[in-house]
Length: 537
Image (cartoon, rainbow, N blue to C red; front, side, top):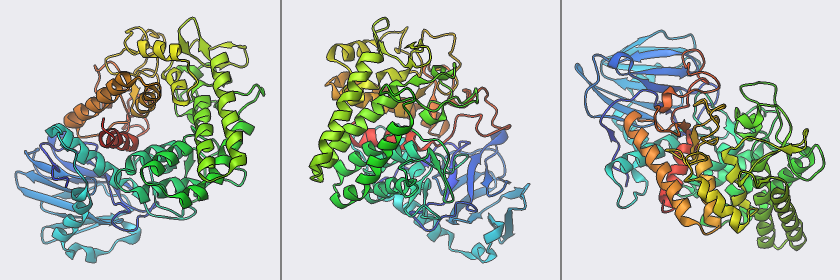
């Protein structure tokens, strides 16, 4: 059982939301909030469906508890406790004040209790609900989760935090999404995203395989008739671009841990159709390698790649992309294994040939002998791209790198001019000072990237490199969880800047726009930490 729920401080920025694990959620009108401590005074900010400030008296005191859907804080005027009793109501017991509530938020108080909720669904009768029972219900799932032996106190607290984040990001079926699904951070990204859903399922497979299967099936719920899967989905619709093709990888990892041949058989045609769509729509020159969609926004040239503002895309040129083609080659290899499991003999050869072809093209066109590294290829100029990015390690994933190339890639992890930063793997080479900005994919380190690269080194039997990456990644997550109480979207590769002070798309200005901040309580940071921990680190 996970017993270590207590925190020694009340941190700002921890997300609070009701989970589908405990009951129905509401995408449009459900409450989403986060903790605050302006001027050292603890409180809660309601963010959705409207704004509202809840403040507790006095300054912060020691020994407080906060999970993703309940809390207990000590103030000079006594204890304050609270829980999300359903998707629409937050019940608080103890001294507090409510201010600046928008029309979308309703509230009432009586007998030392305060109820805050969505105006469209507000039920003042919830004020008399049994708070002790609600608190027990909210914490029950978390306390039931399996511990991991020999964890440090910081590790135990971080595990409890990561599981709590995971819980609050689960939605119930709604609209066109017919299965339980997840969101990257509940706010401001409250929608369903393709690659995030996969990385979420990777962690959830250790905790609830059925839910892991649901969140991948939910992505397929939103697939278009021609095979297209959007990068972002809501209960009502989809976006117009796609995202990294990692869906078969997610299905494989979930199915490896909890086999379900019927589920695999159900999803297999959709997985094939999606890869067929990519190959039909993202190879503009017909040379066999795929290019990400390039956008006009200079702060997000390629949201489709998941590396929105990487210097790789500054020229806005079409690029045979290292990451795209490595993902595709791996998906083809996995689909071949699925076809074999399903006794679809005619399909096995198709996917194996595609895997071999993509790997060969990656080796022929995307390896830079000058740098000893994989780089994108500029289709328009017919020349290698000069950008050195963490995506250059991705051919390890699919087996496209030779043994000698893999050794060179491993050496780059220790090279302070390449990717040997204080917290590897930086999103661009350390020597690329012209483009470094401490901004998203212009320097900072991403947890999903490290997770993928570690898997690549494992494929080549280079377990020391893989273990080093996992250890450094988990240590950094734990360090900042202890310091800030939050799992961040990305981290400073140089270990000099606290994540909340890093830029996001040109600014660090959360008061101006929540997308101009490193996102807090980020989903795949939590799930991939759990996967690394439960998989043996």
